[in-house]
Every structure is written in structure tokens, then in C-alpha cells.
Length: 348
Image (cartoon, rainbow, N blue to C red; front, side, top):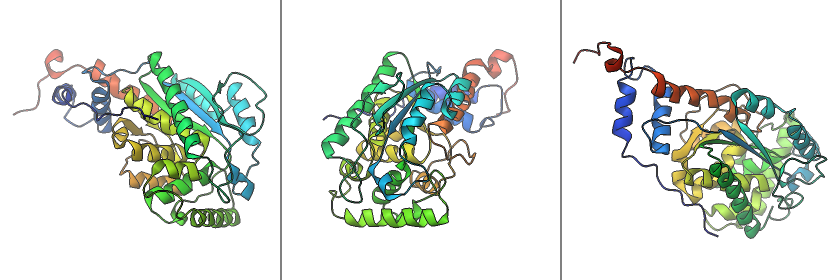
């Protein structure tokens, strides 16, 4: 398959954007990271007047065969139950998306149990991945197909005018998949990648770490060197693969991408191996309370906007960061310049 065509952010407008930002009625740099965000969004959109249009959140849901190894505090059927909760508007991401005006879409990427309600996007790759302790989670072709389906969902939103997007996920045991992807692709010990996930106790964390260490050893020579698609196929989930494609398509469409927590960032890790320029379109929304996420943010040399000790997933951190982007474009659009306000600028 051909991946979305991700190009570096265009720079011709940078000087003009900086001048607009610097000549607002404030000392230069005094709005801190709002100024950096405004510049970034203007460059992504290729305009001196960045704006936010139809912000959207896509939540991808899927199950993981690794759940059979007891690496989660919750049973696998919770994935389908939570998708139903999304569909009736009762989950955290529903409340937070509503509160910030984000359109919410739920995608069945591969949920194992029947979902008792309609209203989601049917993109299922099957009833969850296979148990990667014993075999690869999916085939390479399945990983590529999931990437393509995730990209297609973003292109749909682009056709409706969306220019800011976030991705969330739901999938029992998906922190285990994310931890293995991180360990392999960042070349860090699994101990630095494993956390409590949905709330494991100390004994549960030790068991999870041991299971994942064995899985990594079992697949030590399975992937071609630095091949992100092979690694995704071995350890990933269908929702992670679809998010990978979603990141690439969002960058191709010149969207500003709000990056959520551990699992969402693991998908970005895969996407960045395929097309490194995808990172130019990303705003890291928050640092979660999952230890692996903080380590992954260090890998990207990322400075997240928020630090609220979140560890829910679903895209909640990305939704919470949207008002900060709104503030960034608002000051560019609404603040007077020194000249227009008749205010004396600083002395030369």
C-alpha cells in the first residue's frame, strides 16, 4: 500500500506570522507557549490567520489477545461495554468532547464481544488481535489494512472541514501492546514501559512486566531491523494500527493533531517511523500518569501542554487541550497591534 503523503510544514509565512504575533499589544513572548502554538497552527494551515474549524475526536476501539494472560485489572468484555457507553453519551470523553465542542466519532476497529448498540463506524478487523505471547498479534497485511482504514476515517472528517483532530482509544490490555511497541521501537527496557494500566496492584504490575518481557524475548528476531510495520503487527492492536493511519492522514490534510496519552502516543511512535514529518503537525496534549508515557514523551523531546495525572485514555487529555488551541488562535485574531491600538511600542 502507499501511505499518506506527509510533507514538512511549509515555512514561507513564518516571518509574517512572527511579526503579527510580536506586534500585538504585549511584550514579545509574554504569552509564552500560546505564541508558539499560534505560530505552529498558522504554519500547518498555511495562513496568517489560523482558525479552528469543526474540531473532531475519533475513538478507535479494539480488543487484544494478550488480555488472556491476565495483564489487565478488567475483563475483556469491558471494551464492548464501554463502546456502548460511548454511544449513549455516558463516558468521560463524551462529557469532555461536549464541553469543548468537539465532534465525536466511535470506530469499531476490532472489538471481540458483541456491541449491543448501533451508531459506531463499522471498520472491524476481527474479534480482537491474537495473543502475542504465542504468535504475532496480526499479520503484516492486517496491519497495513488497519492503517488504511484509519486514514480513511480522517479523510472523511477532512472532507467535512475539520482542521483540528484528536484520537482516543478503548481496548482492554492495550497498555501492554503500547509498552511492547515502545520497548522495541525506542530500544528501552520493558521495565521503563510498564505501568498500572487500568489499575493493577503491585503484584499485577510485576506479572504484567514478566509476561511482556517473555513476549519480547519470544519475538526477539521476528521483525526486520527498525521495521515499524513488522513491530506493529507483532505487538500492536487494531485500534493502534488505525490510529497510526489516522495520524498520517491528518498530517497529509494539514490538520493540527492533538496527541493524547500512552496508547495514542505509541501509535504516533509507529507513524513517526513511517513518516518522521508527522511530528511537525502534533501538539502533545498532556503527560499522563502512566510511567511509560512520560518516558515516551522524553523520546520525542516533547513538552506537553497539561499535566493533570490523567490515565484514562479515550482521548480525554486531547479534548482538554483544545481550549488552549482556541486561545492561541483567538489572540492572533482578536488582539490589537501596537499600531492599530495607538499604543507606543517598546523603545528601539
